[in-house]
Image (cartoon, each protein chain N blue to C red):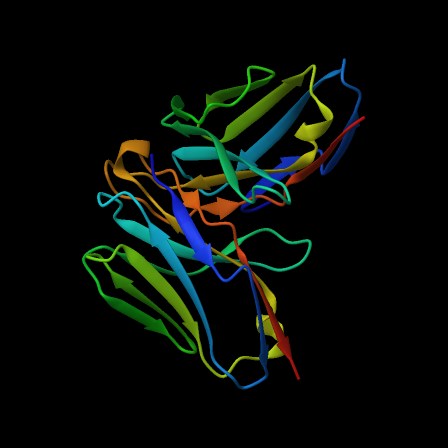
Length: 115
Length: 113
């Protein structure tokens, strides 16, 4: 499969559950991102990984924990979420050269509902 | 940090008319400004981008202009078609955030035939 893929596409979880979102990119990129998309704050940057190192953590609550084991995979571990965390979680990847940004390719997203 | 403001939040035009969406940014060090289109239920996709060393860029019916002094950039769509209906996001890439993008809140464009 090409491009950026995300699993699961839909997730319903209770506030006490622990779950993980998975993202995989097949584009040979070296930077990956997590965004939260909700009606109130569209496309809110959460985390940035460049060369597998986290370079940006945009004041995200600790109940969200990212993991980037290699340049092709990115995870978002979720625990004790709140109903306001319900949103579409988008993963993206891009090529990265120091100081120069390039097009970000988005995955289809995971629609998360916290009950 | 960088802050991107986008206007209008909704825009309705007749088929064949032009549409203009405007964004302002706060960080003068930002050097990359892409525009993404997101159709209902689909992922955002890049439609055009511009770098800070260029003032204008055009791709068929779509153009982007950048005014570095005023820190604003605009998307222009000419001869709009119903398939242009979507949410459009502008973004800026501040240097201190590596290659991260800070997005505006989006503009919902509706093109009626």
